[in-house]
Length: 213
Image (cartoon, rainbow, N blue to C red):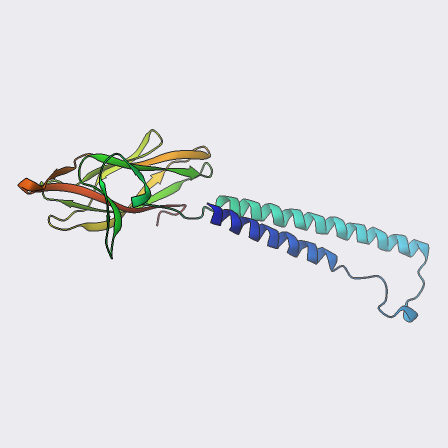
């Protein structure tokens, strides 16, 4: 995300500048009071120059280690990527919004989906905030996929006369860096409210994080 890139660049720049400032604060071989600065022989001067070169080499190595370490640490971190349910693409359903809710509702079989960029070949967890309502005698059943691969399916919590909201976590296996389609499909939706029958799902948001919690 843009926010994650800004944070990464800012931290990296901070550590590089800090390392440069540390290197520039080398102790001077010249006395701060020139009248008391004793002449040095050429041999001693060459010795001092050698030590200065060694300090420069050590400082450069320190800068390289700090920069490399920050790149590795920040590269492994994944800023939370959040997708709002109402902004996702869909094959069915309606957008519902009031003072307390802003969600996408699937009241019949259908899919909501959107693209997400996975940063590298490491585990990522999709945290879905969703709710179910069903009076047909069965729970709303969802199938969750990344790309063309199903990563899980389950029956979600539901109320007969009201929505029951909960968080559902699905592990995305390590995948090659790139953009993938993430989808949630409702497979047993039913909207026959004229005859008192309904089974639906709403999706509030999805968060992609490194941690399972």
